[in-house]
Image (tube, rainbow, N blue to C red; front, side, top):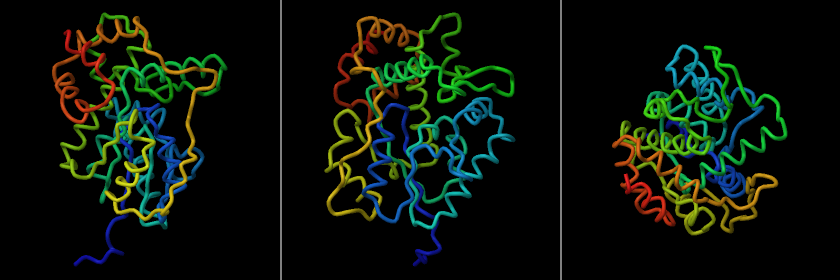
Length: 290
């Protein structure tokens, strides 16, 4: 029987888009899970790259000479953590790390956070609008090819966007396609590495704040935790913004996206876990019209 001390550290990442409960889940881990190094987006943590900005572009362009040293630094940081488990809810993971996770990560597990795609897209849009309105510095970066991109988003040069060449995408549509691409990467990552039995799924809109679901998640990964959970957790709301409301214009834009969406993406969205997500009736109707 293998010595537990010699086994690779249990390494957990969230499979998620932004605006999908990642900061809430990180706070839950930080306040309730024992013997686990927990982080959300490790800004200003020496040796633990946050992976936003250039690593996203490098991954899109498959510039592994630039990307791999950054990913290996992160793996080195994880290995040096004293705790027997590591958790990171960073939504940059599927934007920058997906192609190399199977090679670089050992004893890995995932929490798959899925929020309604239109709500994610609208929330991402609202957050970017606020960031630009207040003129936050350093929100754009210049890639090695001279292009400028929003630091926390895909570049728009990914393959899924090429199916919309000649179309003028709204920023809402850009973020909707980003959500679809991120979910496709999640499914391909699990399939490619035969990791389907290492993922715990959470339907964000109905399950994320359910203590029973969170307890089952910790049991799934065999993590030590407090007997009574602290549920006074951080909610990363966009300041000065009200509820995320999907308008008739948004629905028209969703339908327009679905008209050109390749069949492999549509097939994915018709299967589990997406087919069982709550509150998606209108989205499914818009998708089925094409």
